[in-house]
Structures are given as structure tokens and as C-alpha cells.
Length: 341
Image 1 (cartoon, one colour):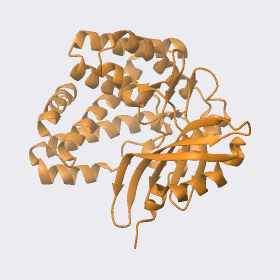
Image 2 (cartoon, rainbow, N blue to C red):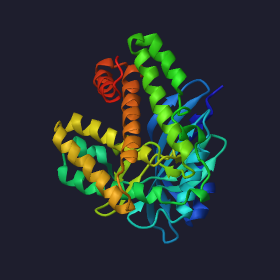
Image 3 (tube, one colour):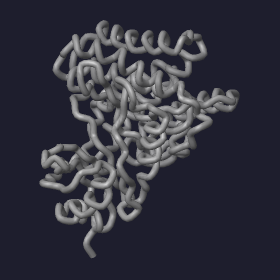
């Protein structure tokens, strides 16, 4: 039996799908041309995890061509309805207005467990880090901070928890027990460290969230590759799979750790990297008019260390294992937490 996801690589099928779902919404009269590019293509016998990009030339009533980029995020066993719901929620709450924006949700298909949305055109922040474009980096970071501040001040009472599993470190996919089993199998020398580290991460988060009646809508996957420069003044964030209700400090700790890691690797100046992290955080606190207290710093540090270990996990446990890239991260967290390896 052919995998159903192959239908979304059949341009005739996609043409008919878009005619039914998109033409009425945009008041176009037809589709002139569609091309497809696979951004993520993991397709097995009956299961899949894919991201497709369609470049579509729509025909207007004035017989002109309007070109749009349409993305599809689909997973055979994880419905992407939450991605559509997040984008729709933010769109309805005027989040897309102004210079800090998001992709435009189009429709959800239960047949494919797929969300379709208009993409945003531009380069991501990591592109500028990789190219050592210091001017662009320093202009983009304050706007990225403003984007997160804009998200975190939205009323959580209007939003459902779009990804319940992701809202706690103890349940974030794939789960600590699954990670421990993989570490035990491949790197048993790290198992005790991992168990102690995750116990600390989870306990610190549970202590705060258990003592606070307030939770925030967070992005959940904050890193430079998800920050897109659209134009001189416009910036968007992408990838809303992990949006949930949790502690806003998680976005700050995750983003600063990934910013540090990418900057140190591609620019190689630790003093400059600290300057970038400070620029991001100071802008965020200024916009939100909050003080960096000792308690908030401890929460940010907890998520920073957790993110560093998640990055190490990627290098230890992905298909082409690269343990040499994981070791410095593990050693750093070991020092930060005072846990022996």
C-alpha cells in the first residue's frame, strides 16, 4: 500500500486541493503553476514526518500572477492541528499586525495530519551569525527580544494549552526515561550524570510552576534558526509545534543557550557572544518592564542548562553520532550544576 503522504507530492492532486481550500479565501481565479521542494522528508512504509514548500503562481481577476510560498507540516502519528490552532489564535489576536509577525495559517487537513500555511520570506538569524554579519545580528536581536515579549504578554486565559506534553520538562518528547535508556545503551559513562541533571531540571521547574498561579504562552523552541528577517523593519518567528503554557523563562534560557552555542562556533569570540546575550535579555526586560531578580535568573539558568543537554543529546543519539561535539556541553553543564560525570 502506497504511503498516503505521496499524494502531497503529486502536483495535480495538490493543485485540486489548493483550488478548493485557497482560491475562495484569496479570491483568486486559478492556479498557473506549482512547484514543490522538500524541506524535511522522512517517509517510511506507512508513516511520515515531512515539511513541504510549494511555490504557487495564482491567477488574479486582473489576469496577473501572484506568487505565494505555501508550507505543509505533516506527521503521521502527531496531528499538526495544534500548529494551525496556534497560528489561528495568534492571527485572531492581532499578533500578525505590525513589524513583529507570524506565518499566515491557511487550513488544516485531518486526512494527512497536516497544517498548511503561508511562509515568510527571508533569511534566519543563524544565516547572519554564520556569515559574521555583526550589523545585522545586532539589529535583529532586539527585535527578536521584542517578539518574545509580545508573545509573553498575551493573556493566557484566552488560550488553551496547545501542546500539553511540551509544557513540562518531565514530559517533553521523547521523555527522560527514553533518553536514559538510550544513554545507558550507547554512553553508560554518562548515565548517572544524566539522571542527576534531569532530576534537578525537573524539580526546579516543578517547584516554580507549582508555586505560581500564572503561566505564560511560550514559543517552546526558541533559537536563531526560527527568527526570520523579512525586511528592514519586519521580523517573524516560525515553527509553532511546541507552543504551550509554561514559564516564559524557558524561551529566554533556550534562546540564549542556542545563541551562545551558534555564535561561539561560527564567530568564535566568547566576549562578543556575551555581548549578544546581554543585548537580547536587556531589551526583553526593558520592553516588559520587569527586573532580572535572582529567582528569575535561576529559572533562566535552569532552562539554559537543560537546552545545552538537549543539544548534547542530539549529537550523542542522532543517526550519525558525534560524541566529540556533545562532550564540551556535558562538561559545561557538569560544572554549572556541580555534578560529577
